[in-house]
Length: 165
Image (tube, rainbow, N blue to C red; front, side, top):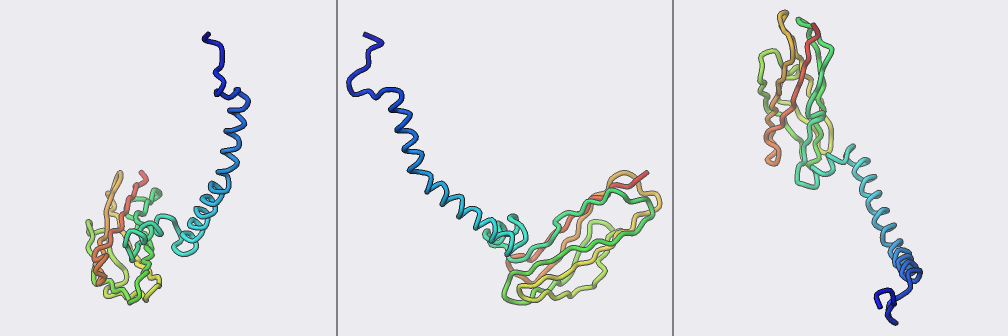
């Protein structure tokens, strides 16, 4: 008979009960994983300021530039603006910015190298861009900072500018 159950097959309600018992047994493990994940997230935010920086640190990076990309949308042609990039040094020795290169002559570094960031410290890289009077549309550029750190000899900071008509 097709509809007859074999003697060893559990009733549908017994199968559901067994499933619930398995779920109850695995809840402490799931809760433990969630607690560890939240602890790691809290550590990343407190120690590094972001999960991204904690991930980069875990992957071997010890020097970060923030933000990695500036986006400026309210600029008029002929205008000059200043931006500040933050340089974070997670090494045990001072970090020296030896020089910088730009993709455009309209970008310039205000603080001339060498710039020193203390161990486990933060420094600022001030950048100025000056648009020509006939600038239109969108402009993308970048600065490359050269450091004495062997793990991060070059740090790139991007910039996107949208000129208002």
